[in-house]
Length: 484
Image (cartoon, rainbow, N blue to C red; front, side, top):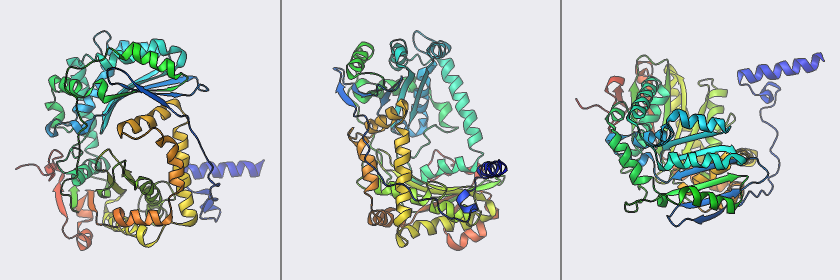
């Protein structure tokens, strides 16, 4: 009993500290993953209504819930640069009142069904959806249809949401990591459609009027730019009947709209420091344009990214956190969007070690080419990706979200079954080729923190760095500097 209790206490202590039990026991690596095996998921069926609405139904009769998601294939990339945040406000306002129901009435009605309702607007898409027990679908679907087809966009709700968004922005803009994420968007995309902040800025949010929101809704929220997804305890015939009953009257008088085509323009590597004298830590990022979601390099890129900065045992985390103790966590992100994706590697560290971390990030990106991913390291990264993917499909809402991604990026439904075998088929050569093409090439450097603590050592390796005072930072401009 004492030994068992001691082992339990040790395990809990290690979890609290974020430590690796294998390392404490003298073993530096976890046991190897099991051999991959064939997996087949539910095969969704689809059709199209006469009004152009695409319908996809994933029959999952063994699960009691029903997830319904309406996807609009337009989002923040369609915002005007001086009205950044319009798509976000439009999406969020759907659940804040319709012509028949107020926001509290919508929330109360869904809660009485034991369900949840949601809506949002992000880059590349907007959405609205509900999650309920399948037996409550008849009561929940009219509410979903009402918020999607008849939003009121009441001025009082617009004012309240803008105030909440601005309050959140003011907090975010005092945090180095948040500021860095806004700056990297401009560094990669400039004045391009992905360059502005999806949630808006302190200057653009107040400028957005109700007429701008209504115009965005009328332009992009339309059946021929939308996909309705059912996932859960529902048959294809039931899904069609629901779609016909609640969404067939959805019409538009405007001409067909095409998704915004985005670009990175004439990108070239640059180094930018945003000087935040009061910052307790520095956020360090290397970023650059990468691949679109439909790129043939997508799966190789996922494995490369997982090796570099996804998880506790990734190369970045091992080098920067485990070996040197310079950060609580280093990571990377392959953001494969509909057009002109991006890659970012980042870590948050003490101001005094920002320059060192920048070099470590740079070194690990280059090492992806010179020190190939192979053997157990490759297998473990593949297992991480396939395991996470399979878990994401366990719930009805997760399954619907995966289908939604395929709809947004105009990918075939068969892609659901392709993911795991495609990841497992990635070879050492594939990862090395991807790394040579996208990771080992020059990147842009973005550091947000107390510049006086790291500027001197930074100049030795990044002599062309621009320093922008926090008070001079303008996220609405590609050059990031306020006009004097």
